[in-house]
Amino acid sequence: MFVYIATKLPLFLVQTVGSSLFFNEQAGRNPSQATLNKHWTPSTTKLNFDDFCEIVKNERPTEVHELMRAFRKMDINGDGYISHNELHIVLTSRGEKMAAKEVDAIFSLADTNKDGKLDYAEFCRLLESTAEQCQIAALERLEADAKLKRQNFGNELDSPPKSLASTAVTVPQPPHKTEPDITLKKDSRSSSRPSSARSRRSSLSNAITMAASNTKSVKLAEPTSIQDWHHTCMKGSFFLEEDGGITSLQYRLTVPQTATVYLTIRPLNLSQRLEKPSSWMSVDTAVFVVSGKDTKEDSTLVCFTESRDKEKCCWKGELSAGTYCLLPFTTSCRLRKRTRKSVSKPVTLVNRTDTGELDLTRDFRGALSDIFEVIDLDGNGLLSLEEYNFFELRTSGENCDEEAWAVCKENFDTRKNQLSRQGFMELNLMEASERGGDPTDLWVTLEAMGYNRNLEMVEACPFLIDVYCEEGQCTLQPVSLESGHRILNTALQRSITARSEVKTLRGQENVLVYTYRGEHRISTVIANKTNQKVTVHVNNEQSKNCSSSRGMSVFAVEVPARTKMVCQHVLPINEHQEWTYNCVESIIPCQ
Image 1 (cartoon, one colour):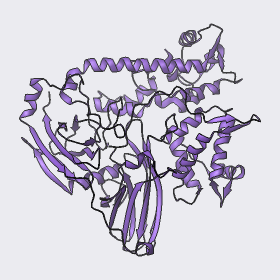
Image 2: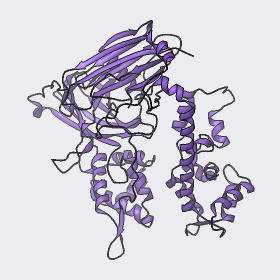
Image 3: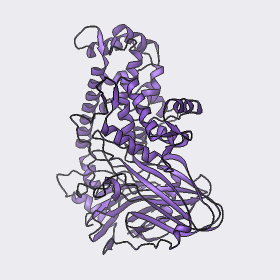
Image 4: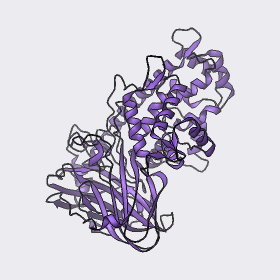
């Protein structure tokens, strides 16, 4: 019942929480009829599991801070309570109207002390707790019902060192989303499989073993006269999304004339202590250079940073005059969801001075300073409107227009019509002051930028792209902030298939496995040339010192008819030790 109100909020609040409606009651959500109609149209006859997963991914659950914000709009006198009459008027007259009995039932359940008023902060806590309990119950039921399927589809990856291990409690998402696939866990209580499952796969198995004697990369020599080349650079960041996907800025590179170009990307160290670099410095990075129009069919992979020099990934070659799209990439082997440890008391963001005025704490100022460093894309120490808008897009999904920017410049410290670091601090202090020191919205911003409640950046990896041009002056500009860019996925597939050893699965000459062996990673693509989907079982259990982008050693992928899809990326857990990739792919027959 607690969940029901989130699906029946009035129209002027639907924009805040409307996208969180879909799922079933067992998963802690109760979809409205409008939401059901959006996904089940008159022409819909059925939904398969892939369709269902795509819907759930897009219909995110309601966050407590969103509900609190919605209730505050209903709380006219701002005392933290809503009367029965206020709630009744709003919920029965706006948006998807509720019946009076439904409102009475909700109010009776939430009004624990029967004083005729709803403490909506407590209500939101109960709502969150109820949703979590429903989700836990649903997961337990799924585990019981799908035991046999889990046994057939695989077991969890052996845990690597804590610094690189993924302890995500959700089913891992595919590393690339151009095509649907399935990744399932196996019952961890037993590594054995039914003999029937073994016999179904044995005649179709195909083993591919790859080994690397060491992970010391061949360095691409930096041009000796590079100090004389024109240099431009741009910062950015990989952001880890709730579904395990990666969001990053895309860039436009303009080359005025045919020139020799030296291109690099590396993680950006924000630590002020030389002996303790930022925790994300081990995250792998790369840049794909694509020419052509903004469609998958017209794009052409030109090159990608394939060579390693310590944490830097490099490419050197000739680029013709023209405009190129630069697409940053990480495999997700070392940037993935982890179990969020419960924090008894989150870091304090705002306190009061001796005079009673609100101020930002030292810890919060430090985090804001690092955020400023990341969103100052050109590194000039100031935020332009364009840079600030990328930050706003990431944290709130909105843009700051020219008029609002003018007001911003009038009230906060600016230089050259751009926001200074001090002005950025003042802006956040104003936001905290407007809410009386309530840090809820501040935490929304921090979490969107990859921070946890201990003010640690654990779900983001800032990076720096450098472009050196021997002839002429190249320009580099940020273009868009995107997740799972279709052109990047296509470029990634082409980079693998063009430089790979290719084999067919035994007994399935129209199912191909491309295995790319680079200086520091191994990647595979599965191509299904048949007219029906195939399910491929993948087993990495014999690999040593390896971390898969799937987060599992055994899993299955479903490849639609006549398509290609990236199967997995593999990196060494410890780069200073030998690592061996040993993978067996085999077909799972349709039932």
